[in-house]
Image (cartoon, rainbow, N blue to C red; front, side):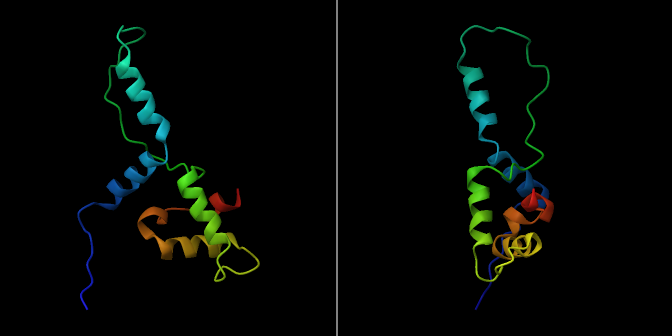
Length: 105
């Protein structure tokens, strides 16, 4: 059996794309700004940058965290560390940098 691995994206690039995905309002704001016909307000000087931090409370990510808390391997205690470890095993690309404090808070 052959295992396939994707080495195309660096971990920093994958982290930023997940962070960008968890902030859907950023893309909508940019599209709305481009649709305006009249140039009003202060002009853009700098290029937009990708999101740096992940919004773990976004619907897509938090629903996965909630499902992990209900998984039998986590147990009745629902320890934040066990949930974190389960999420990392389940999807290391998405949850590779989540902290147990995020789940507690």
